[in-house]
Length: 129
Image 1 (spheres, helix red, strand yellow):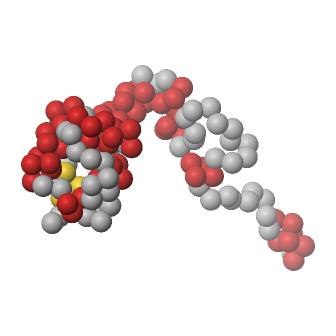
Image 2 (cartoon, one colour; image 1 turned 180 degrees about the horizontal axis):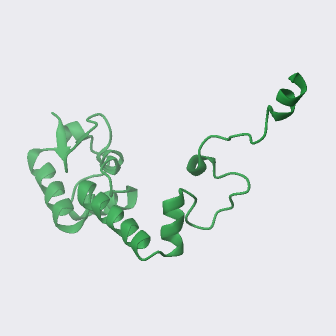
């Protein structure tokens, strides 16, 4: 039986507590809170959930949590607001640099992209001519 919650198909072989964080916006802490309020054992496998259990989880997530697209839209609107008001953080988002004060002289490779060597090959080109 496949279980779909908030548009995400959960892995049927995993424990419910470990499968719920696959939903964007639900972490391990929220997953355990959801399961305790739904009175579901966290060690239960997803394939062993009844339809009533799945309905309880869906109801709790729909009423109490922002997940998936709603959350992604909120995050993008917050970033757009930072850019529009021209805050420091917004300018860092615009430039594609780290936003939260990390150093950029070294590291920050995931944000700045692959290393580009500046000035290489210039001396060799001058020697050939």
